[in-house]
Image 1: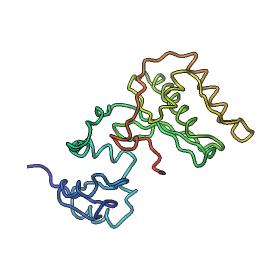
Image 2: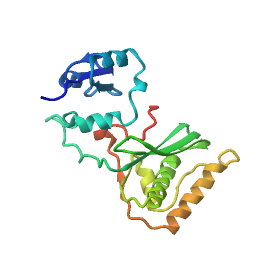
Image 3: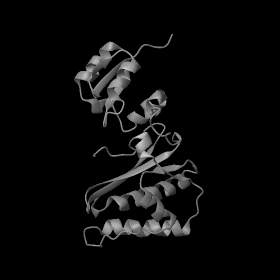
Image 4: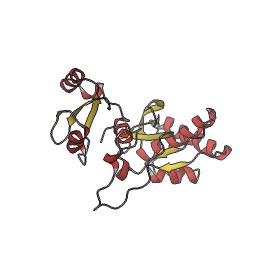
Length: 219
């Protein structure tokens, strides 16, 4: 007999504590931005429900729940078949920018555990596309340094194309405030020109899988 669990739903169709995954699933499936987690005891679930969900959740929560409960990721028969499942042993990268241009930052997260492996910024007067580009190149350099050949996921088609062409094709104008960003761009382009790699660069299918594990959660 499996271990009994309690499911806390902080944000869903009907927030509360549920005693089965099926009841929990009904509250979170197709609910954008759902926040939920399982607990081993009712007491722990009650404390969690009354507290701040961010103390119990991390950016990989939806990925971890999907792995534990693959039925949540299965499409209904009326839907088109979803893309193949993501590779858990991988690096996910993402960027965030408050404004366009605005304060820009990026980071890399190990998908299996949710561990943040690197984070840069925020830096003034950047764009999200630049951050996505720099994140991928940083990931390539990091994995090469670690002698690791796990794939890298990015949810930015533009950034993946820029990396493929070894050129950050931004229209952003250099200023005194974003000098640091353009210095990083030059370093990234130089790294791509001078280094070879066999790392797979893969597109994260947000529509099918939810937000990328490295997402900053600011949407």
